Length: 92
Image (cartoon, rainbow, N blue to C red):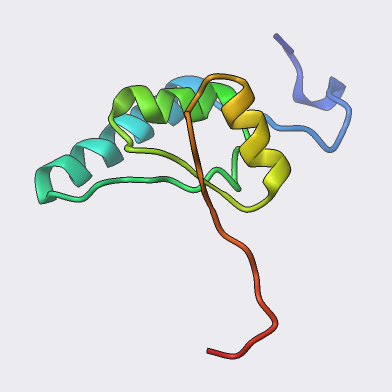
């Protein structure tokens, strides 16, 4: 745990875990209430810890941008498969 943000080497990922977990729970609750199956994208946090929290809250899976992210999530036991989004060069 770091006591002073100025002592952290940058770039780094700093998050208030309590707030993040509360937001995960709140959004999952909303999705449950309106009947949506949530498969959150991990591109913001890229964290096994928070992906596991999303799954524990009720997400049906996770979405990854890169194959290496999907491999890390599967190898960690977070999920058995992921949804992978890949950019294309085609106009839609």
